[in-house]
Length: 101
Image (tube, rainbow, N blue to C red; front, top):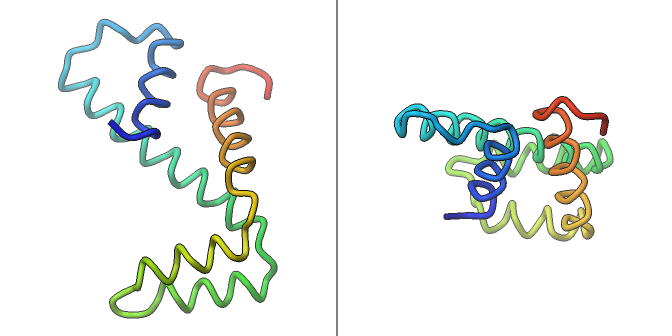
């Protein structure tokens, strides 16, 4: 189980959704994991300058995209991904649970 899945599983427990049908739970975990990943990516991209966003867009649009190159670029341009990720998790949790962020 990856970190995103663990995070989502914890959210479901906090929300009190422990008695779901296994199929429904799997579907919900997949959906929320996808939503969180998009949420996190948006937060990461928001930290980039316009020029950096343009360069990242070019890397992503390459066919086929070179994921190692993209990850290296992000690591170079966004050095504080740990803090950004932690803040995104806190914000997503607050939104999902209906709490003030």
